[in-house]
Image (cartoon, rainbow, N blue to C red; front, side, top):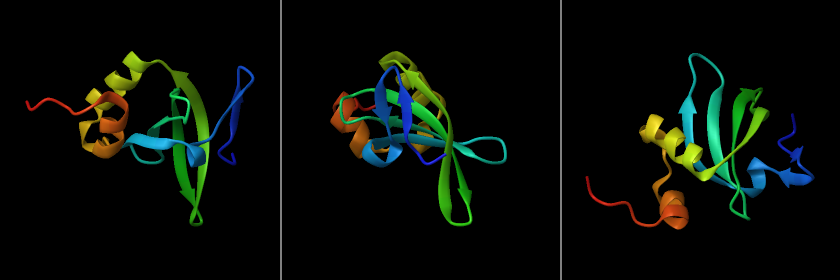
Length: 92
C-alpha cells in the first residue's frame, strides 16, 4: 500500500501524521501508532521492502486505545510527540 487510507470519507496518511509509538511485532513487520493533524489516532503495519516503507492493516482507534498501545509498548513511545498530544508526563 502507498500509505494513504480512506476510511469513513476521510483521508489518513502516516506521511502527513506524527509517529507516536512504534513496536516490532514477532518477526516482521512493525506496528506503528500515528496521530493525524486533526487529532485522530490510527495504527498501521509497516514493512521495509527494498528500502521503501509499505503500509498495511490500517485501524482507526480512540484515545484510550492509543494510550493502551503505548502502555504495552513503552520502549517505542516518541516522547516529544507524546508531550504535544497528552502534555508533560508525570515522574514515576
